[in-house]
Amino acid sequence: MSRMDRIRNFCIIAHIDHGKSTIADRLLEKTGTIQITEGQMLDDMDLEKERGITIKSHAIQMLYNHGGEEYTLNLIDTPGHVDFSYEVSRSIAACEGALLIVDASQGVQAQTISNLYMAIEQDLEIIPVLNKIDMPSAMPDEVEDEIVELLGCDRSEILRASGKTGEGVEDILAAIVERVPAPKGDSQAPLQALIFDSVFNSFRGIIAYFKIENGSIRKGDKVKLFATGMEYTADEIGVLKMEMIPRQELSAGDVGYIISGIKDSKDVKVGDTITHVAKPCEKAIEGFQEVKSMVFAGVYPIDPADYENLRASLEKLQLNDASLTFMPESSVALGFGFRCGFLGLLHMEIVQERLDREFNMDVITTVPNVSYMVYDKQGGSKEVHNPSGLPDLTMIDHIEEPYIKASIITLTTFIGPIMKLCLDKRGELLKQEYISGNRVELHFLLPLGEIVIDFYDKLKSISKGYASFDYHVDCYRPSNLAKLDILLNGEQVDALSTLTHRDNAETFGRRMCEKLKELIPRQQFDIAIQAAIGAKIIARETIKCVRKDVTAKCYGGDVSRKRKLLEKQKKGKKRMKQIGNVEVPQKAFLAVLKLD
Image (cartoon, rainbow, N blue to C red; front, side, top):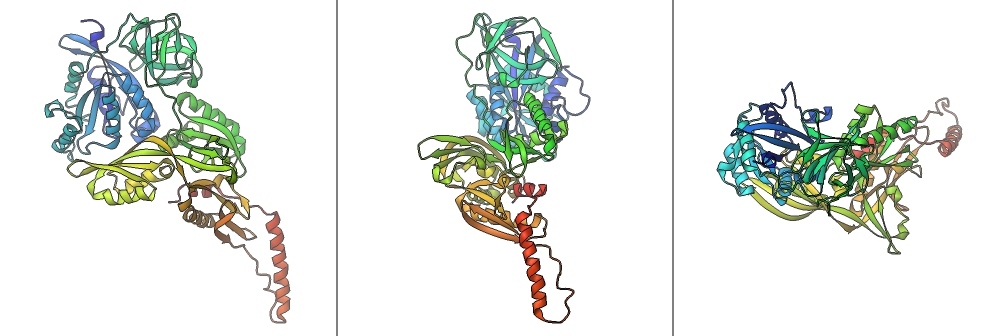
């Protein structure tokens, strides 16, 4: 057998919380790669452990003896969440096989299906595994039916296992060796290696993880990256076990890392191709895309003096997470801050958490929104991420907003409320399919702007947690949008401006005014809170002023004495209103985010 015939590259596809990282740990333990101490070994970020999700991809090499031969197994672990689907697609492209892990008590879920289709498109060998069969609530036979229906495989091909007890893990390792094909590639051809992930190390710079499709690479070679055209020297190459192990040479089929003194994560793009400077390959590996931010929000320091610290923190975060983008912006209400772009809502939450934990930054985030295409009457177009960046209404011809294709898998009992939720969010039902027994998959076309704020939470509560949701961006469509401004005493608060559909604008404006009325403290003068579209006021609330009883000292006598004192007070209040300004408290901004 040649060396390449003994390599197996595989990834794991599973929905959140179906036991992917636990099974990965069992595989590592069985092959003697690590001694399990406690908790999950691959998910090493605190946040990952707490939420039980994988945020960064990992790669790890195991050695396994099978039939007297020693095989090299490369596990490329992938995030399960929909926000990171591009990263997942690159990890899948670096593999020849995939373990499809399904929880025996929960059945097939939406994200499993979308990642599975990606793997099938790349022609991976799929090994179905039924996990958590030791659970009292497991329904192995029903879930096996679902898998057979989904994959069209034989029942005998489905492996049963338990990550907790370690049962069935040997069978999984044997199946990987027997069923997953060895990598195909020519080690004599020009170098062609796919980058599927990169991490930042504060001493060594950016470390890129790659899989060699063709050719070979030696330490000290001059290499270049296809998408950026940058040239580097391979200072160190090697394979990944629990730590990095340097090697002199890696060739086709190998998965490894390269350190070449790159300082900036923007230079190493996931999905890019590495090749030699002297003898480059003719074309890059297919499927490379620039990662695009989908959700935008302003991030401002609570204390304006922290602005520079916030910039430094975001720069450091960006080294670890190249998909985070940010640029400076300023707001009248909040001072100086940054407009950040995120892959999705989970990504935004994680960035906020990491700013708080790793950098101790107290930040305030404005209402998240998506990017709109604004077309003016001259036929030009521009992308707008922030409602305050909209040109004058008279200049705009029409606005287009992004739409997504969403797939929701749920029990048949919840179809009604879920359909109502999606239709209220201006969705269109594309089709519905029954998967098995009492489970149904609904396909919707929805505006991304509608799901940004609280769609996922509502979906979970309506379906008592039994709905899984997955989406990908589909197209831009013209939409009847209006910019809703909030005015306090006639002055606009730019941080509270939102772009919303004209039909929802009035109710949304009214609810915003009511909420602000509760949260803004009373002043010495009346405060008018108004919601406006352009020059038209659509809702108003008034916060009454705090008044001193100036007529208390008049007992009896002529009424004109009371009138005179009240008039005097009224004049004072009017003067105060002209010079007074209204402070909007922090919690008012946060409450508007959670209006529902």
